[in-house]
Length: 595
Image 1 (cartoon, one colour):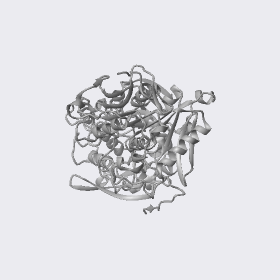
Image 2 (cartoon, rainbow, N blue to C red):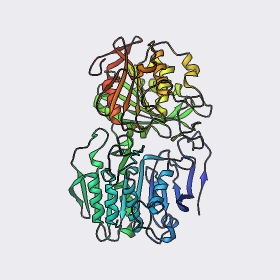
Image 3 (cartoon, rainbow, N blue to C red):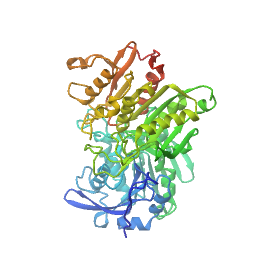
Image 4 (cartoon, helix red, strand yellow):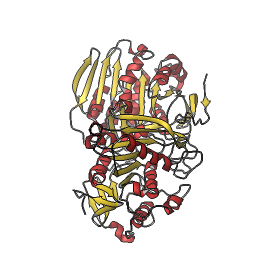
């Protein structure tokens, strides 16, 4: 039955995961093994969407795979979602289990979600996990979402009925899992009922009114709109706490009465559920609980160009965004920002996550979003393993099995400048995680190209296969200054220490850039000096030279290993927009961000 296929890497088709087909998998819940199926569609890309499918009582995972249209949808949908078919133990879901049951069906769903962090068979992006359930499976799907609401970007349940005692207990419970980090001591005081989730509750007779109320409270969706004859859409009007990072349109709850919905869920209703609802949402990591936003295909954005072309003998992918304000004035040179994604991701994901396309449109500059070639990270931490699938990874250390990066980035800049009006004195680079290390390597190898760089959630990491500063391009770099502004979250200290101190890699990296910029390194107690609190979340440590902010680090309270649009906006407004390189010299235009 299971059509498993492991492909060999094909340079002619380098952007596809190497395992496809349907796989039988097991996980352990308490003292029992639980089964599920995984279907990875053909031409699936890295960092795919993942849909958890919980069928009704009496159905196995095989039944859900064979008797519904989910497989066909996955093979034909543009997103190529990976499907996870769960099954009830002994043929029946424990839809009446108490809240907090350690080894029940909710624990089974949660264990599968946690297994998504393993990247040996599939790679699901953390912003794109969804739940679908029918009958008692829909009840358990809702209970699992109430248990861990920050884990999912959307939920659809048909003919379900969550016990009110369960939803009440979940709503009032402290929320420790906040999307990318654990608030073990509940110091932030967030309850599970505070975490919004886009939910569509469908009933063949009547939708589950108690569940609709629960989700409406979580989204603060108070205004009803009858969008069509069978559905009421509840929307939020209360302003969002982080309106740059979130979209109010994603804080929505739908309730529908659709006769024979359960039967239709095996056929035509699935397309409506996925395309019309679930696939529209993403929960990006960033603020506590994540940031809900609508998903926008890059190809649908006016001014966005897609490239998949040979560069330096390798097929490479990138997106170039040129806003109308730049296109309509080709005589006026515009700044250029290179934006680099993290490990396992791609240019399209970083485009949607970081918001650089939006800022470029507002401020009038060109943004380029490249995708790394497929490779492995030969280090072990919460995000990386040498056992992972081949996934996009910047070739920092010149592996022969991957394309070289410096010729690629030089070609990107030259190509963009040839086709669009680029101000060569105002070229910048930013990126997240491994992308931030790529950005630093660009700054180390070719500083004359850039007016400034801004690495986010990344330093000169320890434990890599080679010390970044030992690479030959660092020794050969031109001895010229380069402004650098780095960022780290308070909840990613295992990877990026959120305060520099003697002996940690954040201090090591800042001192490396201070030395390269002919500035005095910092030691001991002096790391505590000079911090400026911008508000309750942001603390900035900036080192100035001749009136220019040359090296900086900002700590973001209650942020995991993530990036946000607020961060991108600060980088542009307070740093990139004020800097240029004229005849090799850095010029800074003063503003609010002053010594």
